[in-house]
Image (cartoon, rainbow, N blue to C red; front, side, top):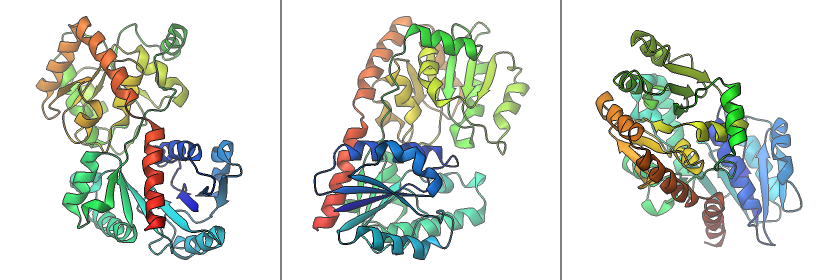
Length: 372
């Protein structure tokens, strides 16, 4: 049996997909049965990223067309036929831009419906393209894996697809996210010029992340409240958060850290007094689990996938109003015992999610498709 995982979308343009396929490939490579092999199909320049996995059971196969190229519609099926002979094969696309006649039983990964749920930030043309392309991908796939129960429900409510064709395979924090040694925390705090106590948000600044509402909530806190540090990639199309910070006179108290090196993230989480995640919609919400895995108390939204990810290990709030967010932040800042309790619960909650479990669920789907 040959399982082909398409890794072409694992590029800096899609960092989330890149982390997903890298962790999934690693975990699946450790669970392959003797008669199975895993092919990682990617652009030639991606070979180095997956070199540590390759061996007798895992191979990298170069495929030049990107997921945005029309040529993939005929070149990928041709490549799949060539590399699978004489094996039975499953093809797994982690992105909806894919070959729509791949010539093999197909699995598709579904993350979220942000272009449809937040139409004000996406052009009508882009929404139409997304809907048509996703519909084609759903028709192509024999099975869909959704990254959360909420994501699965949204998909079933929006598109005509049989429920038994969609399985939830949740994400997980990487092993590097764990409580950090004091020296590492001190080093990150020094290099990023961070105070002894601060509140942290990690993520991009897209509108559904709700940073403007978070800043309005932070403005309601007393002046002696710890600084708010906003870390993550910045999309210049959405300057509203920086504009809000300036309008609210928060430039001295709210700091935009920008992109943070992946190696520094665990210590950054661990250094924070609390982690806040005010997103209005998430396919999964991995930063919540990453913060929990580092032992940091979490306050997050009570919408979409976040309650199932956070469980009883976070202080949940309504993300629609600044007052609700401010109340949650004040409650944590004024209650060291509650912070300690949430930190302990968070460690247990994060441990419930593993890439080994996700890989096992995914491999079971592959095998069922080939045996059916």
